[in-house]
Length: 190
Image (cartoon, rainbow, N blue to C red):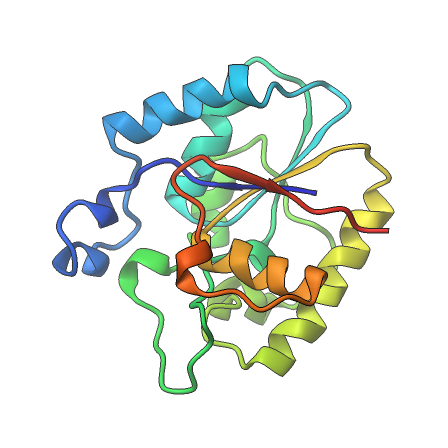
């Protein structure tokens, strides 16, 4: 599993006010970062690309995978996640998922996995407790195992990546361990 942080989004340009933007797009810099993934992490037709249901992650994945016939999946179990988890946290507008109708309309090559609870599309994993997240993380890891692909690329968010790194490795991480825009981290899952 190769986790990739999305390209620069509009929500990072004027903190903290910009965190209240609804469905922020990639910036010009973010679009260029996504294009650069074509050479730094080239995709093949054998690869699977799993993407968070936010505009900036879908834009990153769409630019990166343009003209590539890999399998594309949009999955709420890699949606934004606050790290570290806090019981008093709330999802900010910049971290809300696109609704399924908009996903189907704008990102037709990205398909959702079958048989997911409808609530996951609206609530995501952003403010779940560690215990609830860990249960869903196991479900997602099993989903990835069943894909039987050599490489699974997951375009997601800094907190989500760090949460999965912590879950899979058993190590403790902090916000200091966040990846930068379009950086990647490989995790082996047996």
